[in-house]
Image (cartoon, rainbow, N blue to C red):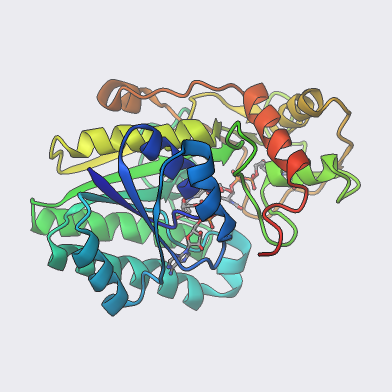
Length: 339
Ligand code: NAD
Ligand code: UD1
């Protein structure tokens, strides 16, 4: 069975390609390398001992996508390609709507015309907005997003739902990720943010290697046990395995399905800093700062539906995630570096 992976050279995509190859799938990546390194394409076979197909192409380019879909004839598409920086999306909404929405529409058109109607889409817990209750089930109403990035996920979920409704030959699985961190145990692939990271874990790892003096903890006056924000951190390899299970599901012709991919557990910012200190063997310094605009206090999943229907459950704990992040960061201090 052949899987086409858009954005497969990126952080979550590359880990998913490894898991798919390990499970015996044939994998073809489409990535424009906007936020990825070509080195990933060499490291995936290094980890798995298997070849991966690669097209340096933009999903917004219909003629290229149509050519690739017709030539490769994949059985399903896992669609990661997109822009994902929340702050940047507020400054450049047009770029985000254009890349994420137009890109997905072009991809779906090329899929439809080539006869491939199976898609797994990277959505986010951000679609829940500020949740009324935790843990968050898939039944929780979607909330108002605070930024254009979030709205692209919100809108694309609706667009894909409508496409499936109009043509029941389509199978659409929307996966809502919580907070992916960690890296492959080989230390060969991991997250490589450009510039100063916005997300907590990449910032903590950069403090650990001395790129920043301390972690800025955004607020300690939330209604949480230690006052700092609580999130559902999930190991990227667990997340990747969730996609393999979603491929198994799509073979059953399920129509439209939505699953949370999280661990079901919440950890505070201070707990993450504590676990990372343990993993890297040194105290990570931090300072309490003002709250970050747009942040919510608590967000963690109810992950029981994915367990029941996909037979998937996260295996790794917070210390595993921190150890693997540290291995990646300490052996690749500049990420993938220059070509
Ligand atoms: P990433 O930036 O590492 O990967 C995205 C990949 O898509 C990159 O390799 C980039 O070069 C490629 N890409 C972007 N626009 C493209 C285009 N027009 N054509 C072809 N390739 C293009 O991000 P990631 O963290 O691996 O996230 C993957 C997906 O999961 C994204 O859709 C993201 O929004 C979603 N997601 C991520 C998180 C997270 O915390 N990382 C959480 C929830 C959802
Ligand atoms: C962010 C995005 C969300 C996206 C998710 C996963 C925002 C507002 N939301 O969510 O859309 O789906 O990442 O990629 O950016 N923190 C610090 N110091 C830091 C960084 C973060 O204290 O330097 C705190 C935050 O206040 C929060 C927690 O750490 O409590 C996690 O933050 P982050 O990693 O940015 O993820 P989210 O806010 O959950």
